[in-house]
Amino acid sequence: MNREILFKAKRKDNGEWVEGNLITNERNENQKYIGYIFDERNGVIEDFDLVEVIPDTICQYTGLTDKNGRKIWENDITYIRSSGLSGYGVIKYQNGNLVLVDEKRKRTYSLYGEWKIRKDGNIFDNAELLEVE
Image 1 (cartoon, helix red, strand yellow):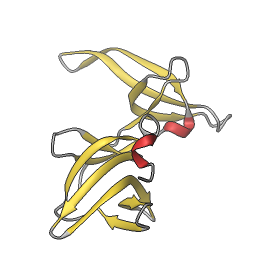
Image 2 (cartoon, rainbow, N blue to C red):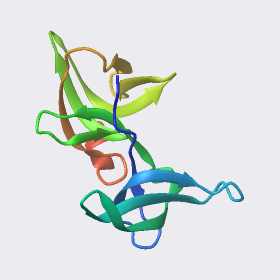
Image 3 (cartoon, rainbow, N blue to C red):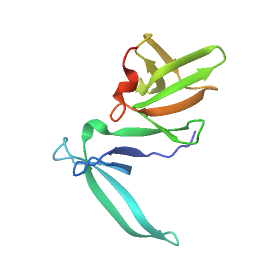
């Protein structure tokens, strides 16, 4: 399976989300950066930027999209449904596998197979979605 390797995180300077390639600092493991192209013409990179990000907000793209075509990232809050099963929780990688962790019901769902997924937010901006009712 080929998929786009892409990351997103909140910028350290203004808290806005940025997506691109993850770059680490070998001399300081607490510094992480996202590099992204913002001007490309005829296949030639005209300009790019490198911004420092908040390490705790780094999320990897899963290669999946939800029913509305939005990219699904690690740490997204989603609702999933398949033949007779459903769950609401957070997208995570566990032991190299992509799963949805439903803390409320103490269940973990493997995301391989035919699932219908609806993205509702993420744990950084929409943590209230996970509050117990």
